[in-house]
Image (tube, rainbow, N blue to C red):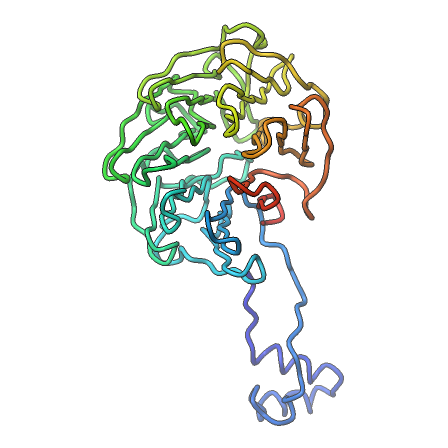
Length: 376
């Protein structure tokens, strides 16, 4: 947000039509409180967009409070439904690049933030791990995982705010052992790495059913950034299922119906209405939106239309509606909504294109927030 220097802006408005000599005189003699200036009113002259956002969240039980994580300016909060925003992390965060935000369903004042944006453009900034607030973002404390650098997703247990999972992509400029899925059961005091694919493939997304967190799916992504190119895809890109709340994982890449060949980035979402239904949007030659109705045992390619598959390394995020079993969203340059289980898609643009993250209220699917390249 650009904060104009009050005195200079007021003087500029008055002196625009005056001679250089009278302009200097006014600038030297009038303060912003002078009666000559009393009828002047502020007006916005831009810019009105806040830059790229890849992480957003609403708050359970508070229809006017939302959080936005920017890729260079930390976390911002609105308490009036977006009429005004306040940066709540200045002075607390060491870096400004935010990759994930999650509000605890059972304790709305508890907020987790993962640092380092997951849309790995050429102009990205690494993060320094995970932060937590227990007063709705007024103050924060650091929870570690510094070497994860880029975090794709955080989810919090629906009943216990001290249980959370982090999908850590890890450094994108070289190999690292700090990639994978991390779990905490004590509010971030300690972390256990429960899933590791390889030192060149990190976790990019994770999802579970709020009613049954034992059923989890996570995706890993092999991706490299070099000064002259991005490499998306490799043997480390994979899908994993867990039946014990993320303590152990099993690869399901070979399961019936999933595509062959090289995979790239993968977005996943478990339906809150029916945990048997899982969506995955997969970057591959035969990629697109895949759906399982038996908890990942078998899959079907539901939609491979070109719109939702554009530039998949930058997008590939999918969100199952928490109220309607057959409603699903895919985010891309445009966002896409299906009300027939993914078979057909209707596209739209939320003011600005390039959509990266979405939060849908768990019981009111008419209330949602979306983050894109124009801010929130």
